[in-house]
Image 1 (cartoon, helix red, strand yellow):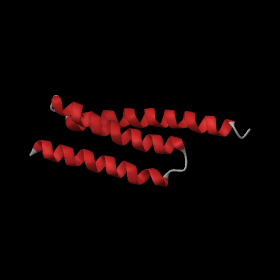
Image 2 (spheres, rainbow, N blue to C red; image 1 turned 180 degrees about the horizontal axis):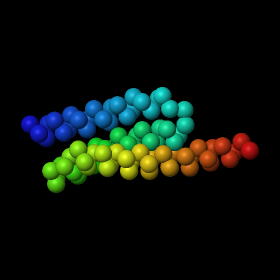
Image 3 (cartoon, rainbow, N blue to C red; image 1 turned 45 degrees about the vertical axis):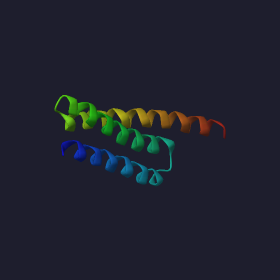
Image 4 (cartoon, rainbow, N blue to C red; image 1 turned 180 degrees about the vertical axis):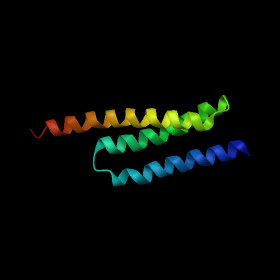
Amino acid sequence: MKTTYQLSLCAGIASLALMTTGCFETNAGKGAAIGGASGAAAGAIIGNQSGNAGTGAVIGGAGGAVTGALIGKSKDDKENARYY
């Protein structure tokens, strides 16, 4: 039962991330949303092994969002450099 709940939670987070990426105009915004959702899912799975799925999801989500935003900003900078 616990595994089913975690899988459905991860699926919900992933689908939410995919739905919200259309709302962002920049690669940095898209990267933050996708990175945050996938980081939270991975963190929840890893954290579950130590009995702290919630803590793992928060840490993974924060790390994923920051990493995704930085990668997206780099892509935005490269795209903007072509026009100047």
